[in-house]
Image (cartoon, rainbow, N blue to C red; front, side):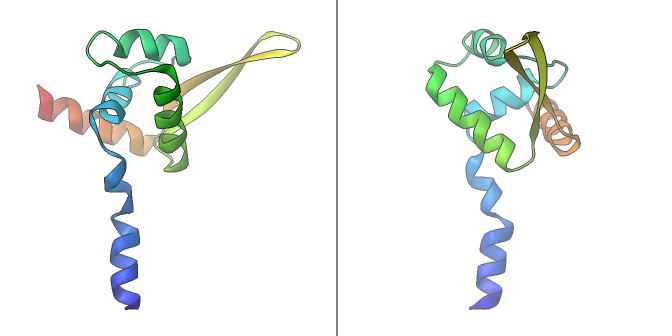
Length: 100
């Protein structure tokens, strides 16, 4: 039973990959974007809402595929910018190669 749990846990990340998460990874492949920029770029080829996009970003953050870079606009307001981590870049490159 213990071995089965480890295998399940090791492959748990696979369940997050759907067309939306792949589109996010591809969008961030060569870019650092805020939520609005990601939404505009993805909406060209995927129909997704802002709340769904936000949830997908939280999942990608949880698994360490993207990271947040905050840039202050005003003293009290910070804008979140998202970029890929090293593992996220490897996955985005692999998806880009598969889809080309």
